[in-house]
Amino acid sequence: MGLVLGLDAGTQSLKGLLVDPEAGVVVARASRSLELLAGQAPGAAEQRPEDWEQAGAEVIAELLAAPARAGRAVEAVGVSGQQHGCVLLDGQGQVVRPAKLWCDTETAPEARALSERLGRSVPTGFTASKVAWVAAHEPDAWARTRQVLLPHDFLNLRLTGVASMEAGDASGTGWFDPVARAFDREAMDTVDPQLAERIPGLLEAGAPAGRVDAAGAARFGLAEGTLVSAGGGDNMMSAIGSGATRPGTAVVSLGTSGTVFAQAHQPIVDPEGLIAPFCDSTGQWLPLLCVMNLTGVTEGVVGLTGQDHRALTEAARAVAPGCEGLLWLPYLAGERVPDLPEATGTLLGMRPQHLAPGVLYRAALEGTSLNLAWGVERLRDLGLPVDRVHLVGGGSRNGLWREVLAAALGAEVQALDEPESAALGAALQALWTLRRAQGTPCDLHELAAPFIQLEGEAVQPDPALRAVYGEQLEAFRAAAARLYGC
Image (tube, rainbow, N blue to C red; front, top):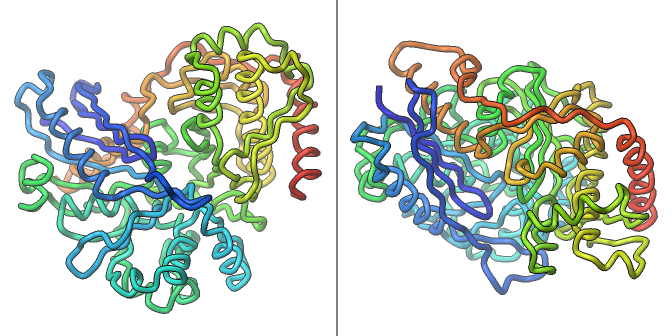
C-alpha cells in the first residue's frame, strides 16, 4: 500500500506528516511558520489564506522529497485547519480580504448583537461574528463575496477545485445546528440574508471532499486524482489522532489556545454556552471547552526573560506551588471561557521576590491550568467525565506542566508520543476515507489505535498539590468575579 498525508494549518504554523499505514508509523514530517498580519486594529487577528496555500505547497514538497518516502505514491490526503476563521472568496475564487481568525476579538460587539437576536450564546471566536463584522464595516468586500469558507475548506478547495463543508468544523460557525447536524437557515439569515447562498454543501461523515484536480496537482505537487478526505477543524482531527474516537477518553490540547474535549454519542448542549456542542468528524459529537490563553502566556515569559523553556521550567520547580500568593489571571488575548473577549491579563499579589523568571513562569503554568480547571468543572457538571486525559500539543512535553495539570484538573494525565495529533488525525481520516472508497469499510477507532502511542508514565494528581490548587481555584474564580463580573 502507498502512503497517506496529513496537513494541519494552525495559527502559528502549518505542519505535515507522511504516514505509512502498513508499518503504523510517521515516515516524514515538515512544517512552515505562519504569522499574524502586523499593524492590525486592537483585537484584530488576521492572516492571508494565500500564506496557508504557499506553506502547504512547501510542506508537501518537503514531504514528497523525504528519503523515507522511497518513491511510494501518496494515495490520500487529509486537511486539518484552525477553526472559525472566515475566508471570503469572490466569483473567480480569489480571496476578497484577509481571514479574520478564531482569536480575533474585534468582532465582540457583533457577537453580542447576534447572541441577543438569536437568544443563545454566539462566542466572539465563532465565524458568524466575523461575517457580520465584514458586512457592517466593509460592505464592498461583502458585496464582492460569493463563497464563505473555513480555513480547512479553503485548502480542500485549492486541492480539488470543489467547495464543501463538513459537520465538525461547520459546528463552530454559529449558523449550524449541531443537534440536527445541519445548517440553521434562521441563524444564517440573522447573520446576513445573503449568507446561505454563499455557503457550500455539507459532506456526510466519511465522504471524500473530492480528488486532486489539475490545478491542485500543479499547485501542490500531488498526483492528479489523489483522494482528498473531508478533513475538519483541528480539534476534530486531533480527536482522531489522540484516541478520542470513542467515549471515555478526554483530550487536553496545549497550544496557542487550549481545549478539552471527548467524544459523545449524543449532543451535549450547555445552556450557558460555555461548552461548545460541536459535532465531531466521524458522525458523533465532541463537546468541547476552549480557552484562548495557553502557550502564548508561557511564550510571553520566554520573550520577557530571554530564557528558554527548559531553563524556566527548572527555575519554576524551585518555586513553591501557589507562588507564595502570586496569582495570574492569564487573559492576555481576552478569553472565551469564561466569556470575556475584552478582558486583559492581571497579576495579583505581586511582591518584590515575585519579579523573578522562575516565579513568573510557574505563575503562568498555574494560571492557565486553573482557567482550564474552571472549564473542566463545567464539563463535569454537564455529565462528561474527565478522570483520565490524553495530553497533546506543544506544551505536553513540559513535565512540570503535566504535574500542575494533573493536580489542577484532578485527573490522570498521559502525554502522547505524537504531539501533532491534528495532522496525524487528518492522515488517519484520509486512510479511513480511502478504504471506504475502495469498498473495504473499517472501524476508525481500530484503524487509529496502532498510532496512538503513549509517551512516558501517566502522572497521577498529587493529593497535597491538589489541595493547594483547590484553594487557588477558589481564589482565581473570586478574583475573576471581582475584576470582570463573571
